[in-house]
Length: 265
Image 1: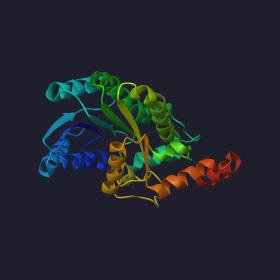
Image 2 (image 1 turned 135 degrees about the vertical axis):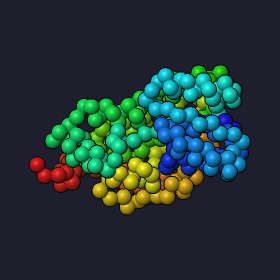
Image 3 (image 1 turned 90 degrees about the vertical axis):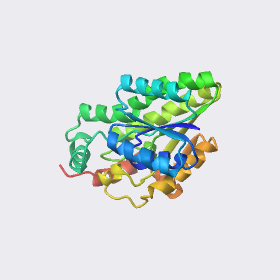
């Protein structure tokens, strides 16, 4: 099996690579940090990967995405699984995360540039990969593309609007493309995790994470869902239920609760 993973240098992406490597797959790793990719590639080979390919690049750079895809196809002849997992908050550390949540993602100091930054990495980067991968899988008449969304797409929680918007956009995109892709033998899956241990959660993306889950356990569930051709894989179940219940709360009640969660002005 020929597997491509974006955002493969840490967290969910790195673990996806490891778990497919253990099945003997050929694994291509794409992310910005080459040394971390080299380390993950070495782990994959030790776990039993038939072959690895390290592809350094930024998923928001369309030229680099096209080049990476061409390299994979030239080397392996095609792609069987693609996990479009690269994403984030458009910030580099906990301090910037706090600034976004208290200022740039709120009415207090809303920033279009901050919203654009998170949209580019979470949504536009996915569309770049879709443009390059879909023609390959159409020609193959086979293949699976899994896109990492988030349960936060259920509702725009306070101080998370731009991030939630990107994940809601991914959900709508996958829903619209899925039946169309099936006509060509392509399976499109949407992965919607709750809070999973990663570099993102280490940046204090939320005030509390009562359902925080181990990365390996989460990825096992996601891969199982993808291999069973499920359209949407949400995990953990208790976090999914909690998120859906929150989404069902009437707006007037939700707004009153949300106002108490925001910093005072």
